[in-house]
Amino acid sequence: MIVCSCHGVSDAAVRKAVEEGARTPELVAARCCAGNSCGACLEMLEQLIREMASPPTSSGDACRARSLRLKRVA
Image (cartoon, rainbow, N blue to C red; front, side, top):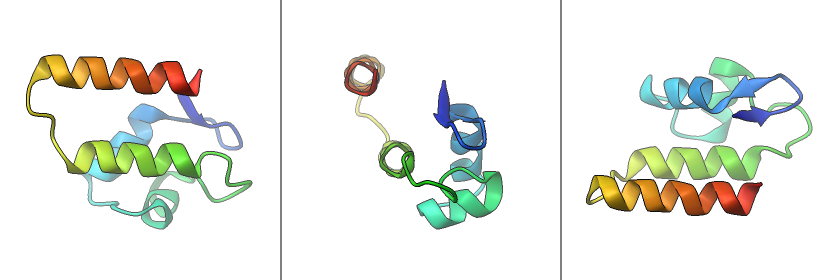
């Protein structure tokens, strides 16, 4: 899924940046450019950062939570 339309950055690229230590939208932008243009993707960046910072309690919870988030974004 594309997170940043300005730079064509996917959620996978954002997740990789977070896995490599980017814990703020500014640090994610420095690693993959997402969030450093119009700012429309900042909310999604913050959501992905939060999601990766707090692991889910069970895999079923993670699937349901991700499904709900994707429905809200779409």
